[in-house]
Length: 143
Image (cartoon, rainbow, N blue to C red; front, side, top):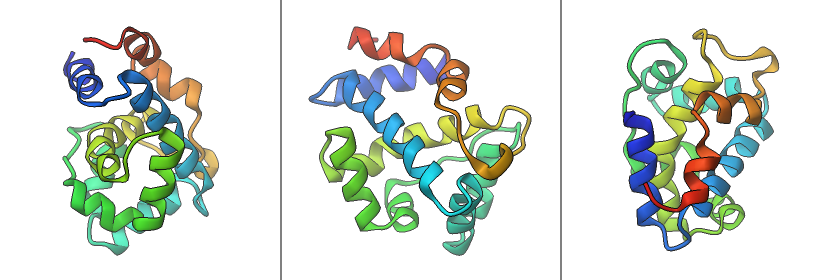
C-alpha cells in the first residue's frame, strides 16, 4: 500500500523511529480538534491561505493533493509548528515535512464518506483504524 510505504519511509527518517510519527499523528489530531470548529476551522485556515482546494481534496473521495512543507507551515503558523514539535518529540524543522506527508492521510481517513464529522472533531481510534493499523507499523520501527 502506498500509505504504508510512505509512512514506513518516514519512520526511517526520524531519529526517534516510528514513535515520533505516532506522537506527531496524535499531536496533529489534538491540534485539529482544538481548533475553533475542529476540522472545519482548519479547513477555513487553508482557505484563507489560498489552499482550500488542497484540503478539500483530502476530505473528498478523490486523490489527495500534496502540500509543500512551507505551505503547511504558512497555514499552521510558527507557534503551532513549535508546539506540535514539542508534543511529538521531534525538531520543529521536521514537523512540516512529516505533517505534509501524514496530514492528508489523517484528514482523508477521518472523512471516509467525503464529509467532515459532526462538530469537526476527529476520532483517533477511527482515524488509526482507517489508516490500517499504523500503531503496529510504528511499533516495528522499520518498514
